[in-house]
Image 1 (cartoon, rainbow, N blue to C red):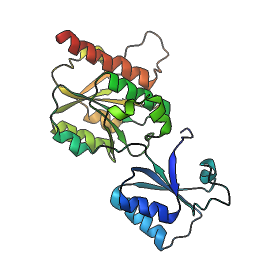
Image 2 (cartoon, rainbow, N blue to C red):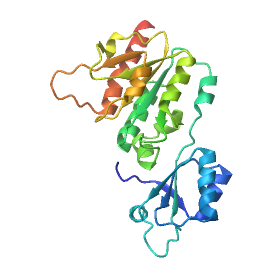
Image 3 (cartoon, rainbow, N blue to C red):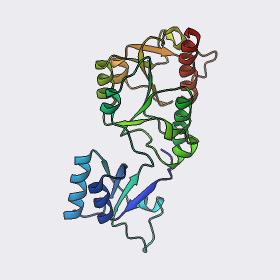
Image 4 (cartoon, helix red, strand yellow):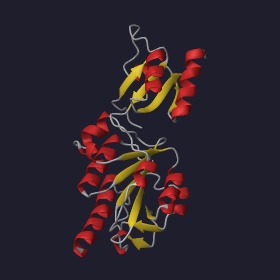
Length: 253
């Protein structure tokens, strides 16, 4: 995964304060592998678990990559990566009334520029929200924010610990789930998107949508290719499919 430009806070007391106050959205906490356990570190781990924040043990070189290698910078072996936005809770989103709405679910997208482009496309196409996993997916950072050209401020971003669980909740709330799959029988334009709430799942270019999500999906669709070079950028793939849904809805109107 690329080096990301992130807003960070560092030092044990500062991270404890951020976790306790709950006013800043924290993507992840990085803890040096060389750090010995103490009362404050234990408190950080307990607060992170309580608040559903991932913490990860990393080599000391990671702090240097973040520009925290100098002796004058007392990070104390603990850094919190801060999101520039406030994430939306899935339960809060589902409590709202939705009619013929669309969602986009991203499974393993690792490039910040791709995520920013996807957000921009979703806003232009009237997508209601985007769901990303808290692990194995790029989180919202300054690169994503910049690439989206401000679109990130116009759509709810929902972060969940389990995409499978999120999909099951959507299905229980009468959302239909559509996953992209290169070997699918149906082309993306063969589905009638007009009369349902639907969630569209896209995976990373190299891995595609995970098998667990494929299993939960109601429909599988593909983008037909005219050559053997089957590696369409995920943001371009999204554009093709999501604007077909827009075309269908406009044609129906």
